[in-house]
Amino acid sequence: METRVHPPVAATLRLCLHALLLGLLALAAVKAVSDRVPHPGAVVAVAGALAAVYAAGALAPVVQPRTRAGAAWLAALWAIWLALLVLSPDALWVAFPLYFLQLHLLPMRWSLPAVVVTAAAAITSFLLHGQPVSPGTFIGPLLGAAVAVATVLGYDALARESERRRELIDELVSTRAELAEAERTAGTLAERERLAREIHDTLAQGLSSIQLLLRAAERTLPADAPATPHVRQAREAAQDNLAEARRFVRALTPPDLENGSLAAALERLSARTTDPSLTVQFAVSGTPVELPTPYEVALLRTAQSALANTVQHAGARRAEITLSFMDTSVSLDVVDDGRGFTAAATPGRTGAGGFGLPAMRSRARSLGGTLSVESAPGQGTAVALTLPLPLTVGRTGQDAA
Image 1 (tube, rainbow, N blue to C red):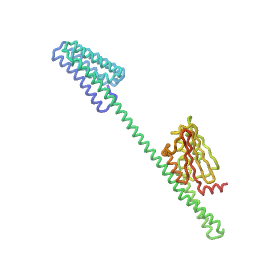
Image 2: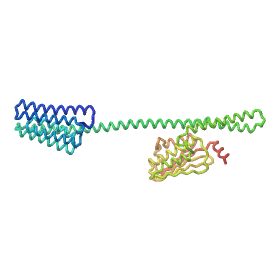
Image 3: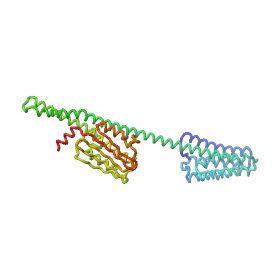
Image 4: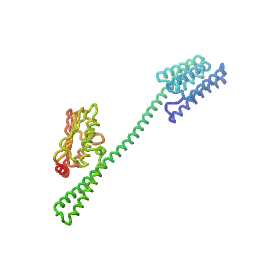
């Protein structure tokens, strides 16, 4: 016989139960011999049989709570105990450990009636043996049954609570590990984006300006001027280093931008977000131009955050992402037909990954752009990010035209 849980307290209680039952059987056998009751040999034999059956069941692995083997073993114990009750009135004290066995091995709808029948059998045996009747004759077995029921129910409640706490601790440990991993990943991506932005805003822009200045100087110098080869060599070195800086920037871009353009990344984002309850469409307006990495990161992260808000809070059925290229600016619009909200009352509304409205506005300000949010209860939400195009991007677009 095994308990449902195996902490040290359960093992101690199980050993106490074994000692109690075997001790009471030994007491009944000794009193039968010393008090010269009728058939002392039969009392000793039946007590020994009961102890042997109990020991066999306690050691058998098949005897488990709420199983047929457990119920059969308990029925055998109860039948032998009834025989012992007929031979000796002292056997009624064995009812107390039997209460615990019945409550442990049987379902609650059967264990409580079994405890009541066992208490009634103990009281009846005492009366049939002609023992002096007193209030204790009835109170003792009934009080013992009540104590056994309260003890087992209380222990079961404590065991369930302990199990719930163990599961909660396991969940907290697992969640903490996942959170730490997510924070590490987010920190890595944020640092990559910061480095890409710093390289673009300092080295790449500086090398681009040097290249333009050297090209202008080369155009103004005569072809046979002594400085012309040196200026050309310096311009080519600046051009090579600019290309290398841009390769560094591309290597530090977010994974979503590694395998294609910003438009392709937004297209994949729309496809991933679309499900049976929400349709997300993506469109490009104007002539696409190559954007600096910080611009692409800001536009992509804003789209991700706005769509996360749509999925988690808006209850929308349709959303549209529009990337618009204009002469001097680029804009991103994310519109949904959800329940909307009062924008002024919820400035800290956040989306997946922690990119809320404050983070979107911070990205826009860092690039000299603006973020606007239009929403009202029941009227959906529109998020618009507008970034001014750098002069080098505008010049590249004009040259291509």
